[in-house]
Length: 463
Image (tube, rainbow, N blue to C red; front, side, top):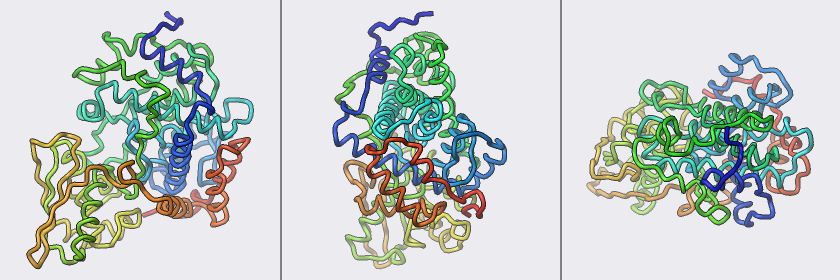
Protein backbone atom coordinates (compact mmCIF):
# COMPACT_ATOMS: atom_id res chain seq x y z
CA UNK A 1 0.00 0.00 0.00
CA UNK A 2 1.43 3.36 -1.06
CA UNK A 3 1.13 5.73 1.91
CA UNK A 4 3.63 8.32 0.60
CA UNK A 5 2.54 11.38 -1.37
CA UNK A 6 3.93 12.26 -4.77
CA UNK A 7 2.74 15.03 -7.06
CA UNK A 8 -0.42 13.63 -8.61
CA UNK A 9 -3.49 15.87 -8.69
CA UNK A 10 -5.05 14.14 -5.69
CA UNK A 11 -1.77 14.44 -3.77
CA UNK A 12 -1.67 18.18 -4.42
CA UNK A 13 -5.33 18.44 -3.44
CA UNK A 14 -4.71 16.57 -0.18
CA UNK A 15 -1.78 18.84 0.70
CA UNK A 16 -3.94 21.88 0.02
CA UNK A 17 -6.84 20.67 2.18
CA UNK A 18 -4.64 19.62 5.08
CA UNK A 19 -2.77 22.95 5.19
CA UNK A 20 -5.72 25.26 4.52
CA UNK A 21 -6.36 27.72 7.33
CA UNK A 22 -8.60 30.71 7.88
CA UNK A 23 -5.92 33.30 7.18
CA UNK A 24 -5.57 31.99 3.61
CA UNK A 25 -9.22 32.74 2.81
CA UNK A 26 -10.08 35.99 1.02
CA UNK A 27 -12.67 38.09 2.82
CA UNK A 28 -15.13 37.54 -0.04
CA UNK A 29 -14.80 33.76 0.33
CA UNK A 30 -15.43 33.98 4.09
CA UNK A 31 -18.54 36.09 3.46
CA UNK A 32 -19.79 33.67 0.81
CA UNK A 33 -19.19 30.65 3.04
CA UNK A 34 -21.08 32.27 5.94
CA UNK A 35 -24.09 32.87 3.70
CA UNK A 36 -24.15 29.24 2.64
CA UNK A 37 -23.72 27.99 6.20
CA UNK A 38 -26.73 30.01 7.35
CA UNK A 39 -28.74 29.04 4.28
CA UNK A 40 -28.05 25.33 4.78
CA UNK A 41 -28.93 25.40 8.47
CA UNK A 42 -32.12 27.27 7.64
CA UNK A 43 -33.09 24.62 5.10
CA UNK A 44 -32.29 21.87 7.59
CA UNK A 45 -34.30 23.40 10.42
CA UNK A 46 -37.31 23.56 8.12
CA UNK A 47 -36.55 20.06 6.86
CA UNK A 48 -36.82 18.72 10.41
CA UNK A 49 -40.56 19.16 9.80
CA UNK A 50 -40.49 16.96 6.68
CA UNK A 51 -42.07 13.55 6.38
CA UNK A 52 -38.77 12.13 5.14
CA UNK A 53 -36.97 13.24 8.29
CA UNK A 54 -39.74 11.85 10.52
CA UNK A 55 -39.64 8.46 8.80
CA UNK A 56 -35.84 8.35 8.96
CA UNK A 57 -35.83 9.15 12.67
CA UNK A 58 -38.40 6.44 13.31
CA UNK A 59 -36.34 3.96 11.31
CA UNK A 60 -32.94 4.71 12.85
CA UNK A 61 -34.15 5.14 16.45
CA UNK A 62 -31.30 7.57 17.14
CA UNK A 63 -29.50 7.89 20.45
CA UNK A 64 -26.23 9.62 21.21
CA UNK A 65 -24.56 12.97 21.88
CA UNK A 66 -25.07 14.84 18.60
CA UNK A 67 -28.13 17.11 18.33
CA UNK A 68 -30.64 16.60 15.55
CA UNK A 69 -31.27 20.15 14.42
CA UNK A 70 -34.68 21.62 15.12
CA UNK A 71 -35.59 18.90 17.59
CA UNK A 72 -34.92 17.82 21.15
CA UNK A 73 -33.40 14.56 19.92
CA UNK A 74 -29.78 13.46 19.61
CA UNK A 75 -27.94 10.67 17.79
CA UNK A 76 -24.57 9.07 17.22
CA UNK A 77 -22.19 11.05 15.03
CA UNK A 78 -22.92 8.97 11.94
CA UNK A 79 -26.70 8.83 12.44
CA UNK A 80 -26.77 12.58 13.04
CA UNK A 81 -24.92 13.16 9.77
CA UNK A 82 -27.51 11.07 7.91
CA UNK A 83 -30.52 12.62 9.59
CA UNK A 84 -29.39 16.25 9.53
CA UNK A 85 -28.34 15.80 5.90
CA UNK A 86 -31.73 14.37 5.02
CA UNK A 87 -33.41 17.33 6.70
CA UNK A 88 -31.21 19.85 4.89
CA UNK A 89 -32.17 18.43 1.48
CA UNK A 90 -35.77 17.52 2.28
CA UNK A 91 -37.51 20.61 0.90
CA UNK A 92 -35.20 21.33 -2.07
CA UNK A 93 -34.24 24.68 -0.55
CA UNK A 94 -30.59 23.91 0.13
CA UNK A 95 -27.91 25.36 -2.13
CA UNK A 96 -26.75 23.85 -5.42
CA UNK A 97 -24.07 24.38 -8.02
CA UNK A 98 -21.37 22.67 -5.97
CA UNK A 99 -21.06 18.91 -5.86
CA UNK A 100 -24.31 19.56 -6.58
CA UNK A 101 -25.95 20.17 -3.18
CA UNK A 102 -22.80 20.88 -1.19
CA UNK A 103 -24.25 22.50 1.92
CA UNK A 104 -26.54 19.59 2.78
CA UNK A 105 -23.55 17.26 2.54
CA UNK A 106 -20.77 19.27 4.16
CA UNK A 107 -22.50 20.94 7.14
CA UNK A 108 -24.09 17.81 8.68
CA UNK A 109 -20.76 15.97 8.42
CA UNK A 110 -18.86 18.82 10.04
CA UNK A 111 -21.23 19.32 12.96
CA UNK A 112 -21.01 15.60 13.67
CA UNK A 113 -17.21 15.79 13.42
CA UNK A 114 -17.23 18.44 16.16
CA UNK A 115 -17.97 15.62 18.57
CA UNK A 116 -14.95 13.61 17.43
CA UNK A 117 -12.31 16.31 17.90
CA UNK A 118 -12.14 16.35 21.68
CA UNK A 119 -11.71 20.10 21.96
CA UNK A 120 -13.75 23.20 21.09
CA UNK A 121 -13.76 24.16 17.41
CA UNK A 122 -14.07 27.86 16.73
CA UNK A 123 -16.00 29.55 13.94
CA UNK A 124 -12.91 30.29 11.88
CA UNK A 125 -12.03 26.61 11.78
CA UNK A 126 -15.59 25.73 10.83
CA UNK A 127 -15.63 28.26 7.98
CA UNK A 128 -12.29 26.93 6.69
CA UNK A 129 -13.52 23.34 6.72
CA UNK A 130 -16.69 24.34 4.88
CA UNK A 131 -14.63 26.04 2.17
CA UNK A 132 -12.45 22.93 1.85
CA UNK A 133 -15.50 20.69 1.47
CA UNK A 134 -17.12 22.86 -1.17
CA UNK A 135 -13.81 23.06 -3.04
CA UNK A 136 -13.20 19.33 -3.18
CA UNK A 137 -16.77 18.28 -3.95
CA UNK A 138 -16.94 20.60 -6.95
CA UNK A 139 -13.44 19.75 -8.16
CA UNK A 140 -14.22 16.05 -8.21
CA UNK A 141 -17.39 16.69 -10.23
CA UNK A 142 -15.52 18.88 -12.74
CA UNK A 143 -12.68 16.36 -13.06
CA UNK A 144 -15.24 13.62 -13.71
CA UNK A 145 -16.47 15.49 -16.76
CA UNK A 146 -18.93 17.90 -15.19
CA UNK A 147 -22.55 17.72 -14.16
CA UNK A 148 -23.92 16.69 -17.56
CA UNK A 149 -21.43 13.92 -18.24
CA UNK A 150 -21.73 12.43 -14.75
CA UNK A 151 -25.42 12.88 -13.98
CA UNK A 152 -26.61 11.94 -17.46
CA UNK A 153 -25.35 8.42 -16.79
CA UNK A 154 -27.80 8.21 -13.90
CA UNK A 155 -25.49 9.13 -11.02
CA UNK A 156 -26.64 11.81 -8.59
CA UNK A 157 -23.51 13.86 -7.94
CA UNK A 158 -24.72 15.03 -4.52
CA UNK A 159 -24.31 11.45 -3.36
CA UNK A 160 -21.24 10.49 -5.39
CA UNK A 161 -19.01 13.58 -5.44
CA UNK A 162 -20.57 15.01 -2.30
CA UNK A 163 -19.24 12.14 -0.20
CA UNK A 164 -15.71 13.13 -1.14
CA UNK A 165 -16.35 16.79 -0.37
CA UNK A 166 -17.66 15.84 3.07
CA UNK A 167 -14.56 13.72 3.71
CA UNK A 168 -12.27 16.60 2.81
CA UNK A 169 -14.19 19.00 5.06
CA UNK A 170 -13.96 16.61 8.00
CA UNK A 171 -10.28 15.92 7.34
CA UNK A 172 -9.56 19.64 7.59
CA UNK A 173 -11.65 20.04 10.75
CA UNK A 174 -9.99 17.05 12.37
CA UNK A 175 -6.54 18.43 11.50
CA UNK A 176 -5.38 15.41 9.49
CA UNK A 177 -1.99 15.60 7.81
CA UNK A 178 -1.67 15.42 4.03
CA UNK A 179 -1.29 11.63 3.84
CA UNK A 180 -4.29 10.98 6.07
CA UNK A 181 -6.28 13.61 4.17
CA UNK A 182 -5.58 11.77 0.93
CA UNK A 183 -6.74 8.57 2.64
CA UNK A 184 -9.96 10.28 3.69
CA UNK A 185 -10.59 11.61 0.18
CA UNK A 186 -9.82 8.32 -1.53
CA UNK A 187 -11.64 6.15 1.01
CA UNK A 188 -14.74 8.28 0.46
CA UNK A 189 -14.96 6.98 -3.11
CA UNK A 190 -15.94 3.61 -1.64
CA UNK A 191 -19.00 5.23 -0.08
CA UNK A 192 -20.05 7.16 -3.18
CA UNK A 193 -23.61 6.33 -4.22
CA UNK A 194 -26.88 7.77 -5.40
CA UNK A 195 -28.94 7.17 -8.54
CA UNK A 196 -31.47 9.32 -10.38
CA UNK A 197 -33.97 6.44 -10.44
CA UNK A 198 -36.13 8.37 -7.96
CA UNK A 199 -37.22 10.63 -10.79
CA UNK A 200 -39.48 8.03 -12.40
CA UNK A 201 -41.95 7.16 -9.64
CA UNK A 202 -41.99 9.86 -7.00
CA UNK A 203 -39.59 8.08 -4.67
CA UNK A 204 -38.28 9.94 -1.64
CA UNK A 205 -34.84 8.37 -2.11
CA UNK A 206 -33.23 11.61 -3.30
CA UNK A 207 -33.66 13.15 0.15
CA UNK A 208 -31.38 10.49 1.63
CA UNK A 209 -28.51 11.08 -0.78
CA UNK A 210 -27.20 14.14 1.05
CA UNK A 211 -27.39 12.39 4.41
CA UNK A 212 -25.63 9.26 3.23
CA UNK A 213 -22.94 11.39 1.59
CA UNK A 214 -22.42 13.30 4.85
CA UNK A 215 -22.18 10.05 6.79
CA UNK A 216 -19.84 8.45 4.25
CA UNK A 217 -17.52 11.44 4.24
CA UNK A 218 -17.45 11.54 8.03
CA UNK A 219 -16.71 7.81 8.23
CA UNK A 220 -13.94 8.06 5.64
CA UNK A 221 -12.25 10.85 7.60
CA UNK A 222 -12.54 8.99 10.90
CA UNK A 223 -11.08 5.83 9.38
CA UNK A 224 -8.24 7.80 7.84
CA UNK A 225 -7.56 9.55 11.15
CA UNK A 226 -6.99 6.13 12.70
CA UNK A 227 -4.65 4.87 9.99
CA UNK A 228 -7.01 3.17 7.54
CA UNK A 229 -5.43 3.44 4.09
CA UNK A 230 -7.36 4.64 1.06
CA UNK A 231 -6.84 3.45 -2.52
CA UNK A 232 -4.07 5.82 -3.63
CA UNK A 233 -4.68 5.23 -7.36
CA UNK A 234 -8.45 5.62 -7.34
CA UNK A 235 -8.16 8.86 -9.37
CA UNK A 236 -5.73 7.33 -11.88
CA UNK A 237 -6.72 5.93 -15.26
CA UNK A 238 -7.08 2.39 -13.90
CA UNK A 239 -9.72 -0.33 -13.78
CA UNK A 240 -11.94 0.35 -10.79
CA UNK A 241 -10.91 3.99 -10.67
CA UNK A 242 -13.45 6.71 -9.91
CA UNK A 243 -13.28 8.35 -13.32
CA UNK A 244 -13.61 5.15 -15.34
CA UNK A 245 -16.46 3.98 -13.17
CA UNK A 246 -18.50 7.19 -13.05
CA UNK A 247 -18.05 8.58 -16.55
CA UNK A 248 -17.66 6.86 -19.91
CA UNK A 249 -16.15 9.85 -21.72
CA UNK A 250 -12.86 11.66 -21.18
CA UNK A 251 -12.17 12.93 -17.67
CA UNK A 252 -9.73 15.60 -16.56
CA UNK A 253 -7.97 14.53 -13.35
CA UNK A 254 -5.76 17.63 -13.46
CA UNK A 255 -8.85 19.68 -12.55
CA UNK A 256 -8.65 18.21 -9.05
CA UNK A 257 -5.77 20.57 -8.33
CA UNK A 258 -6.02 23.35 -10.92
CA UNK A 259 -6.01 26.83 -9.39
CA UNK A 260 -5.87 25.67 -5.78
CA UNK A 261 -5.97 28.68 -3.49
CA UNK A 262 -6.84 30.95 -6.39
CA UNK A 263 -10.16 29.59 -7.66
CA UNK A 264 -12.49 29.00 -4.73
CA UNK A 265 -15.30 26.64 -5.69
CA UNK A 266 -17.65 27.92 -3.00
CA UNK A 267 -18.08 30.90 -5.29
CA UNK A 268 -19.67 28.54 -7.81
CA UNK A 269 -22.43 27.54 -5.37
CA UNK A 270 -25.86 29.17 -5.71
CA UNK A 271 -28.79 29.80 -3.39
CA UNK A 272 -32.32 28.57 -4.10
CA UNK A 273 -35.25 30.94 -3.59
CA UNK A 274 -37.82 28.44 -4.89
CA UNK A 275 -38.70 25.09 -3.29
CA UNK A 276 -38.05 22.98 -6.37
CA UNK A 277 -35.34 21.36 -8.44
CA UNK A 278 -32.83 24.00 -9.53
CA UNK A 279 -33.64 23.10 -13.13
CA UNK A 280 -37.01 24.85 -12.69
CA UNK A 281 -35.69 28.10 -11.25
CA UNK A 282 -34.69 30.02 -14.36
CA UNK A 283 -38.13 29.33 -15.87
CA UNK A 284 -39.77 30.88 -12.80
CA UNK A 285 -37.45 33.85 -13.17
CA UNK A 286 -38.37 34.16 -16.86
CA UNK A 287 -42.05 34.15 -15.94
CA UNK A 288 -41.50 36.82 -13.28
CA UNK A 289 -39.48 39.00 -15.67
CA UNK A 290 -42.02 38.78 -18.47
CA UNK A 291 -44.96 39.59 -16.23
CA UNK A 292 -43.11 42.56 -14.78
CA UNK A 293 -42.01 43.91 -18.15
CA UNK A 294 -45.36 43.51 -19.89
CA UNK A 295 -47.53 44.67 -17.00
CA UNK A 296 -49.68 41.58 -17.51
CA UNK A 297 -50.98 39.42 -14.68
CA UNK A 298 -50.64 35.67 -14.26
CA UNK A 299 -54.40 35.24 -14.78
CA UNK A 300 -53.98 36.90 -18.20
CA UNK A 301 -51.88 33.97 -19.43
CA UNK A 302 -53.69 31.75 -21.90
CA UNK A 303 -50.87 29.30 -22.58
CA UNK A 304 -47.22 28.61 -21.71
CA UNK A 305 -44.80 26.85 -24.06
CA UNK A 306 -41.56 25.43 -22.69
CA UNK A 307 -38.64 24.50 -24.94
CA UNK A 308 -35.83 22.62 -23.22
CA UNK A 309 -33.03 20.10 -23.59
CA UNK A 310 -33.71 16.38 -23.41
CA UNK A 311 -31.75 16.15 -20.16
CA UNK A 312 -33.80 18.89 -18.51
CA UNK A 313 -37.02 17.30 -19.76
CA UNK A 314 -36.06 14.01 -18.15
CA UNK A 315 -35.02 15.76 -14.94
CA UNK A 316 -37.96 18.06 -14.31
CA UNK A 317 -40.25 18.24 -17.34
CA UNK A 318 -43.05 16.05 -16.01
CA UNK A 319 -46.39 17.53 -15.01
CA UNK A 320 -46.81 16.39 -11.43
CA UNK A 321 -48.96 17.70 -8.60
CA UNK A 322 -49.41 14.95 -6.06
CA UNK A 323 -46.84 13.65 -3.55
CA UNK A 324 -44.31 16.20 -2.31
CA UNK A 325 -41.08 14.69 -3.67
CA UNK A 326 -42.04 14.35 -7.36
CA UNK A 327 -43.95 17.64 -7.37
CA UNK A 328 -40.79 19.46 -6.33
CA UNK A 329 -39.06 17.97 -9.37
CA UNK A 330 -41.71 19.34 -11.75
CA UNK A 331 -40.92 22.52 -13.69
CA UNK A 332 -44.50 22.81 -15.00
CA UNK A 333 -45.81 22.67 -11.43
CA UNK A 334 -43.42 25.40 -10.30
CA UNK A 335 -44.70 27.71 -13.04
CA UNK A 336 -48.33 26.78 -12.46
CA UNK A 337 -47.95 27.32 -8.71
CA UNK A 338 -46.45 30.77 -9.25
CA UNK A 339 -49.34 31.65 -11.54
CA UNK A 340 -51.99 30.24 -9.22
CA UNK A 341 -50.70 31.08 -5.75
CA UNK A 342 -48.31 33.94 -6.46
CA UNK A 343 -45.31 32.04 -5.11
CA UNK A 344 -43.00 29.16 -5.99
CA UNK A 345 -41.70 29.00 -2.43
CA UNK A 346 -42.36 26.29 0.13
CA UNK A 347 -45.94 27.37 0.79
CA UNK A 348 -46.77 26.56 -2.85
CA UNK A 349 -46.10 22.91 -2.02
CA UNK A 350 -48.55 22.29 0.79
CA UNK A 351 -50.77 19.25 0.32
CA UNK A 352 -53.77 21.51 -0.30
CA UNK A 353 -51.94 23.45 -2.99
CA UNK A 354 -50.45 20.36 -4.67
CA UNK A 355 -53.95 18.99 -5.23
CA UNK A 356 -55.70 22.29 -5.93
CA UNK A 357 -57.77 22.11 -9.14
CA UNK A 358 -56.63 25.56 -10.27
CA UNK A 359 -52.96 24.61 -10.31
CA UNK A 360 -53.74 21.45 -12.29
CA UNK A 361 -55.84 23.47 -14.72
CA UNK A 362 -52.87 25.81 -15.20
CA UNK A 363 -50.54 22.87 -15.82
CA UNK A 364 -52.92 21.69 -18.54
CA UNK A 365 -52.16 24.96 -20.33
CA UNK A 366 -48.42 24.29 -20.35
CA UNK A 367 -46.77 22.41 -23.23
CA UNK A 368 -43.26 20.98 -22.96
CA UNK A 369 -41.13 20.41 -26.09
CA UNK A 370 -37.61 19.01 -26.39
CA UNK A 371 -35.13 20.85 -28.59
CA UNK A 372 -32.43 18.35 -29.52
CA UNK A 373 -30.13 21.19 -30.59
CA UNK A 374 -30.00 22.63 -27.07
CA UNK A 375 -27.01 21.96 -24.86
CA UNK A 376 -27.94 19.49 -22.08
CA UNK A 377 -27.30 22.12 -19.42
CA UNK A 378 -29.06 24.97 -21.25
CA UNK A 379 -31.84 26.77 -19.42
CA UNK A 380 -35.37 26.46 -20.86
CA UNK A 381 -37.04 28.98 -23.13
CA UNK A 382 -40.38 30.18 -21.72
CA UNK A 383 -43.03 31.53 -24.09
CA UNK A 384 -46.11 33.22 -22.65
CA UNK A 385 -49.25 33.61 -24.76
CA UNK A 386 -51.70 36.08 -23.26
CA UNK A 387 -55.44 36.28 -23.74
CA UNK A 388 -55.11 39.59 -25.59
CA UNK A 389 -52.88 38.00 -28.23
CA UNK A 390 -49.52 39.21 -26.91
CA UNK A 391 -46.72 36.62 -27.20
CA UNK A 392 -43.38 37.04 -25.40
CA UNK A 393 -40.52 34.68 -24.63
CA UNK A 394 -37.45 34.64 -22.45
CA UNK A 395 -34.52 32.43 -21.48
CA UNK A 396 -32.78 33.39 -18.24
CA UNK A 397 -29.16 32.16 -18.50
CA UNK A 398 -28.51 32.00 -14.76
CA UNK A 399 -31.28 31.79 -12.17
CA UNK A 400 -31.79 33.92 -9.08
CA UNK A 401 -29.30 32.97 -6.40
CA UNK A 402 -26.35 32.82 -8.80
CA UNK A 403 -23.48 35.29 -9.01
CA UNK A 404 -25.01 36.73 -12.17
CA UNK A 405 -28.42 37.20 -10.55
CA UNK A 406 -27.79 37.22 -6.80
CA UNK A 407 -30.40 37.07 -4.09
CA UNK A 408 -30.39 40.35 -2.23
CA UNK A 409 -29.37 40.40 1.42
CA UNK A 410 -32.92 41.12 2.56
CA UNK A 411 -34.24 38.13 0.59
CA UNK A 412 -31.55 35.83 2.03
CA UNK A 413 -32.44 36.88 5.56
CA UNK A 414 -36.17 36.60 4.93
CA UNK A 415 -35.75 33.06 3.60
CA UNK A 416 -33.68 32.09 6.64
CA UNK A 417 -36.17 33.51 9.11
CA UNK A 418 -39.17 31.89 7.41
CA UNK A 419 -37.57 28.45 7.35
CA UNK A 420 -36.03 28.49 10.83
CA UNK A 421 -39.32 29.63 12.36
CA UNK A 422 -40.83 26.32 11.31
CA UNK A 423 -38.91 24.61 14.14
CA UNK A 424 -37.62 27.32 16.49
CA UNK A 425 -39.09 30.17 18.51
CA UNK A 426 -38.77 33.77 17.34
CA UNK A 427 -36.15 34.44 20.00
CA UNK A 428 -34.09 31.49 18.79
CA UNK A 429 -34.40 32.63 15.19
CA UNK A 430 -32.99 36.02 16.13
CA UNK A 431 -30.16 34.60 18.23
CA UNK A 432 -29.14 32.07 15.58
CA UNK A 433 -29.14 34.67 12.79
CA UNK A 434 -26.92 36.99 14.84
CA UNK A 435 -24.53 34.21 15.82
CA UNK A 436 -24.11 32.96 12.27
CA UNK A 437 -23.54 36.51 11.08
CA UNK A 438 -20.50 36.73 13.38
CA UNK A 439 -19.48 33.08 13.11
CA UNK A 440 -15.78 33.92 12.82
CA UNK A 441 -15.98 35.33 16.36
CA UNK A 442 -17.53 32.19 17.90
CA UNK A 443 -15.05 30.33 20.09
CA UNK A 444 -16.95 27.06 20.32
CA UNK A 445 -19.32 25.95 17.55
CA UNK A 446 -21.26 23.82 20.00
CA UNK A 447 -22.90 27.16 20.87
CA UNK A 448 -24.47 27.09 17.40
CA UNK A 449 -25.78 23.58 18.01
CA UNK A 450 -27.38 24.67 21.27
CA UNK A 451 -29.26 27.43 19.47
CA UNK A 452 -30.81 24.90 17.08
CA UNK A 453 -32.70 22.81 19.64
CA UNK A 454 -36.40 22.97 18.72
CA UNK A 455 -39.71 21.15 18.80
CA UNK A 456 -40.02 19.80 15.27
CA UNK A 457 -40.19 16.26 16.62
CA UNK A 458 -43.32 17.02 18.65
CA UNK A 459 -45.41 19.00 16.17
CA UNK A 460 -47.03 17.90 12.87
CA UNK A 461 -44.92 17.44 9.78
CA UNK A 462 -45.25 19.93 6.96
CA UNK A 463 -47.92 18.78 4.53
